[in-house]
Image (cartoon, rainbow, N blue to C red; front, side, top):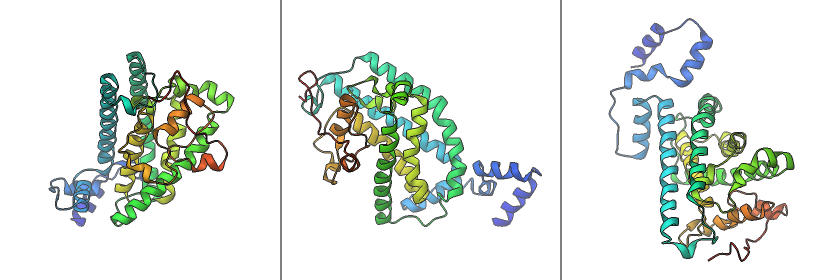
Length: 295
């Protein structure tokens, strides 16, 4: 197999080492010989390994991104139905509901960022991930390692997000960039990514930085990206669910923590935890006026 892979690489050589380096970052010619390899479903590790042998890792990367977008829309649509039917009204944080026009604006913004802003970040990010060592070459993580790394990413993202987000509230940055995200003082799931393209790029780095520091297995990295996106939907959903087990984690602020930021503007900059806001004096206990009080 290795001999055949070397032969194919030799036959397909372009003569330009720089072209080959860039090309092979996205397309591994050695994996062409595994194209007929069946997927092994006997364990998660075997499935993950055979998946990346049968298909180009960059293609799997794009497929997971597409899966993430689908989950985002699915959860957002489910929350829209819940809001319109009012079947969970007693868990709704603010009394105010968003009109359909706000959902249409959020959907347009989502499509714009999905088509024009995020894909370049994905394409540029892929060789960087490989360069720093986020790959399948590492040992597949045990459950304990996986959970510890996921928790580190949550803490790290909260730290970077706090400072990037707080900077966005400086007068010029808020007026010209961050004000877009604060267009809705009553958050809803689909508005989690409602933002100016520049903000999407800047705050997106808060998600990637902990992983670039930690350099986990590629499986952990993908799980973290999906988890972070769905976590953003949760913190913007407008509902404080009683079955949210994250409240068992110390300093977890929940949806009410970030929901209040959209009404106070100058407090609660963290993503999900309250510790960094409390440390730097920007935390404020969620309280609502009579017009948007908790039901």
